[in-house]
Image 1 (tube, protein in one colour):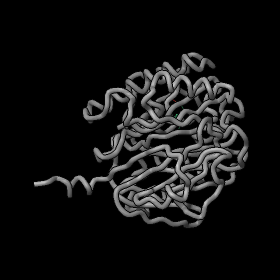
Image 2 (image 1 turned 90 degrees about the vertical axis):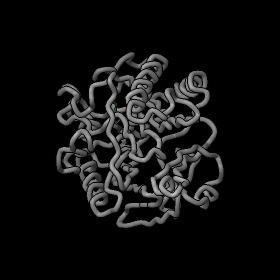
Image 3 (image 1 turned 120 degrees about the horizontal axis):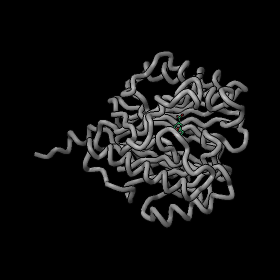
Image 4 (image 1 turned 120 degrees about the vertical axis):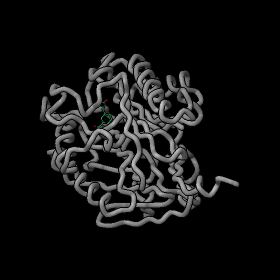
Length: 329
Ligand code: 3EB
């Protein structure tokens, strides 16, 4: 007997960086979402599955494409764009980014919670947050710390560690006027993973702000047809930033963090590749635009098989020059 019918019922997700024309990507069967970056990509599109991210991209332009198995439906509702298919859903919303990052985050996360509760994909596996001036403000008034406060308020209850999504929180290098939130949700919960080299973000000590960040280092989806979803990973060891302002030293540390996270995931899913490779996709977020070529060259030299996008964006601690996120199959 073939096991194909069962395998086809489990969600599958492909992530690719593709140069093809946007219209062709949206027309392909199974396209759940397409992302364009920076000025080279369209700012808007009538298709709710297209999202523009206001981070400049370095190198040849490419769209990030999410593809699922099966037909996809999509629409817009009250400023929120959504699509669903193959047991997965994508949704995005943008709000005016106000002076108080806590207020906008609380509003956005309350909408996210309401959307999850009303959907048949109530488990947010992966969340991206893009806000203006992420490290502006001092001490507990820093916008990233205020964002963490608002995120927790908007969710409205303390998430158990096992419920935490994988996440990325990055600052627009130029003011965009918008806070952007988008997510990947599933019918089945995944497994939240922590990194043995890092203190869990939800246990960060008080020195990093009044509200520890609510994210897990990765999510391993229930379906083996889905990749490991890697959170934004920086040169944080324990809870401390290492190699302040040094791009190559931070990249080495990030790679060690990714190796250790992948090793943790492989204890649950041994079929995952041991190292980042052809089944991995990475996005780099780089604070200093002058360092963009260096990061692109480093990735090419150290991870030649890994398709990567290099973006100009601000990591949420000033001394962190670069962060990587992505998927790993
Ligand atoms: C860190 O390790 C880096 O607040 O959602 C990475 C990924 C970071 C997600 C978030 C923050 C977030 O603390 C920062």
